[in-house]
Structures are given as structure tokens and as C-alpha cells.
Image 1 (cartoon, each protein chain N blue to C red):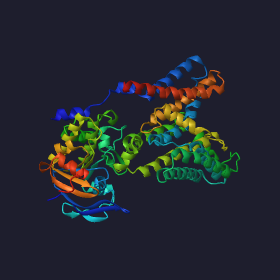
Image 2: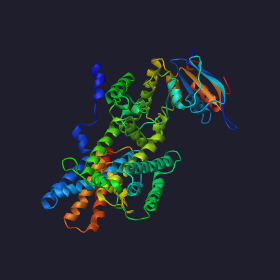
Image 3: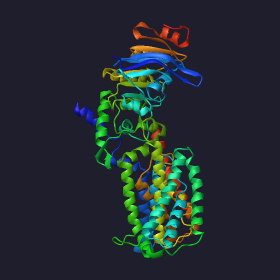
Image 4: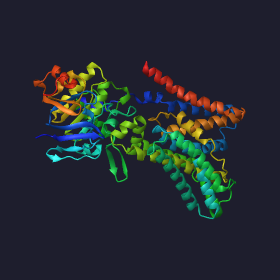
Length: 332
Length: 246
């Protein structure tokens, strides 16, 4: 009896290599590695420590927000407001510190602002039944406008008594010469991956994306979880805003413009499905990496920067094409 | 003793009388077919037992104690489980994840509690074995047949000590071979002493698996008798109104 029960319990649908080859994320990793190898041989400038430092750091801002966006996309939602929330958080931080408050107060105010916006988005969507696209599109406009109001649309580049601390937080490299933002990204990615795989909350996020009605019927607190995912998304934008402020050393109201599209592109390239129910932390990071490598390589190869959009758009379509081909094969 | 007893239950929505003065009792280990045309009041009756609606009049008792339900979760706590018509499954999750949806097992202490995958796979596997279903706990639901999906939905009801399982049209959208599978699952529930209320339009299913048949028409109970003492012709007559009442 024990044998007959254990066999079905242990039975896995596919072996590890088979699952790897079937995953979009795997092929994007291969693409990133191949692109890096090619660029190392084709150009002298790519594999220098300075360029690699730049690439890894540039990836981080999109990657951190993409981690937060992954939660929203898995539930089948979308958050278009992240670029503007990033801008508003940066500006709240900058204005608070410029007014003479400490870095702790500045970060607290900035993160609290982000969370409040996320909660507003989430409540509108989960409790009042607004479509996520519309709510966050509205917030895209509102948050950026508030950032302009907060700063009177000026550039802030003096951050009061804790000026140096803030710059070191975002621009330093405290461990083994790895840029700080990269460390933050790694830590946040590990936390995201853990939540998605090992917590009840993570399981419920996937359930909502798979079949929201079923989740409701089985007693999953769907509304609270939806509010939470929009707060997480806004939080990730807030964190990225704080780090980016420290890195740039100046904030304008242009920061994060159009970022929502890059972030969504990164998650989709990494294997998340906009219809919901699918997505990983690793995928979000890898997607962000591929976008940055494409951007970087075009510059190094001397290709006109106007072509950037074509290549990034092509990467999105190609990544999703893999997914389609796989599904065609399965349905045969 | 009856596991569930309804006494003079009525439910009206404004001027519409959906269920009118229905009394019935269900014994443990009994399969009751609940039949009736669309709008006869079957779903409303079941939704009151499931905690979705509160009765306008009348009382419900479970194991001799008064049963008052404000929401579906409370019904579940009393040992009333529902298999929804659309099964309420998430295609992107495994069979075990679906079985445990909303009541996941965790291990660890305090806030550091993580999902206990091994225990959930094991228990889900045991339940599928008890149900004599070939469903495997790690398989994704999207790759399953209709019968296997039913098994996943029914396995949910066996997680806790269910006393009564309400099944809403479990055989409506599946193939003939899978219908036989589902009827077997119902027999396994019955053999464990669980009362099953089978809401169905399909005469053959009810006459194959049920012990008793209750027929509703226009909100009233028009028949409540053993399968042995009835016939498909009689039930058809009762559903359509050709036979007024027995």
C-alpha cells in the first residue's frame, strides 16, 4: 500500500532539465549570457569593470520596481503608476531633507507616501471595483503632478545635514566594491522569491491570478490581498526612488518618466503573464538585465540610440513568442 | 438522528417567494438527490444551507443543535462542504495546492511560518487514494480531465471532518465515462458516513447513486421519497407539474 500511495505523491510531471528547457526565463538567461559573451569579444569596452559596474547598477532601478510589479501582475492586475510614484517618493525625500530633516525622517516620509498611494490604488481596485488599468493610469498623472507641486517643479540637489549619507546610501559600494543598489536588489529579489514560493500570502496571490472567483469561494481574503499587492508595488517604487535619489544626487520631476513600460517589459520578458497566475522574482531580474544589456550594447556597438526602442520591443515579442510556440506544441 | 434538519424554511427576495415552507431531514451516510426545474428553488435552498443566504423564516438544526449561519466560512466550520458547479479550481496551481486552497498547512513558529509542501502533497495523495482517483497531487489542474478535476474539488471536502457535502450539478459538463467516476466518488463519501446532497438535472445519475429523491417545484417541496419507491417517470411528472404532489 505504501508503495502505491507514494508513487503518485512523489510523481513530478517533468524532470528538472525538461522543466528548464520549457521555461521562458531559462531562455532569456541564455540570451543574456550569449549577448554578454558576444559583447566581450566584439568590443573592448564591455567587459571592463567600470562598464559592468554601470550595467549592474543601471539594472537595479528597473529590477527593484519589476519585483514589486511581479506581485501585481501575478494577481492579473497592472500598475501603471510606478514611474510617477518613484518620482513623488524621490521628491518627498528630497524636499524633506532639503528642509533640514534627517535622512531617517526623509526616508520614512517618502516610503509612507508610496504606501499611501499603493493603498489608495488597492482600495479603489479591490473594494470599489475600478479596473486596475484606469486607477493606476489616473495615479500616473496625479502622483507626478503632486511631485511638481511638492517641489514647485525645481531641481533639488541639496539634501540638508544628511546630504553625504544619502549619496553614500545610493552611490556607495560598501561590500566588495559591488554597487549598493545591486546589493539592495539581490536582497529584495531573495525576499520576493521567498514570499512567492513559501508563504500563504504568495500562494494566495497565484490563486487570485489563476481564478479569482475560486479564490473567493474557498475563503481566500481576495480584497485584502489585492490592496497588499498594490502597496507592495508602490513600496518597491518608493524604495527605488530613495536609492535613485542617492545615486543621482539630484531630483527633477522628470525622474521615472515612462519607467512603467520598461518595468512591465522586464516582467513580461522574464516570463510573467499579463493574464495573471504566472511570474517569478528571478524572471523580473533577468528581464530587467536583458533590457539593460541591449541598451548598453547598442551604445558600445555604435548603433544610433534611436534604435533602442526597436530592439527592446523586439525582445518583448521574441520572449512571448517562445511562450506561444510552447503552447502550440502542447495543444497539438 | 438526522445530521441536518430544516423546519418550515422559507426565503423571499422582495415579493418573490423563492423557497416556501420546506421541511426536510438528512441522515448521515445518505445520498439525497435534489431535483427540480430551473427556478424551482434548489439553489436558493442549498445557498441557505451553505451560509450564502439567511432564511426569511424557519429553522435549521445540525445534530440536534440550532444552526445559524452568517457567511460561508461558518458553514464550513460546522462540517458543511460545498462542491461548486464550476468546481472553483485554479488552473495554474497543482492538485494539492487546490485541495488546500484557503487552508494551507504551514510549519514553523510565529510569523516565520512557511508552507508545508511535503505534508500537503502527502495528505492530498492519501485522499486521492481513498477516493480511488488516479489524480496525482503534484499535477497541474490545467492538464486534468473533467473527472480528475471533480476529484480535486471533492478531495477538498474531505480535508476536515465534513458531515454533509452539497454538490451542485457535478455531472453537468463531463463525459459519460467521467460521470461514472464522479458517481463512484459520491459512493466513497457515503461509505464514510458523510451525507451527500446531489443537485442534478440528470435523472439517471440520481437514480443510480441516490437513496432518496426530493423534488421541488415553484419553491415548494412536492415529493420526498426513497428511490426504490419512485420512478424516473414519476419524478419527471413531479418536476414538470404533471403530477401535483405525492
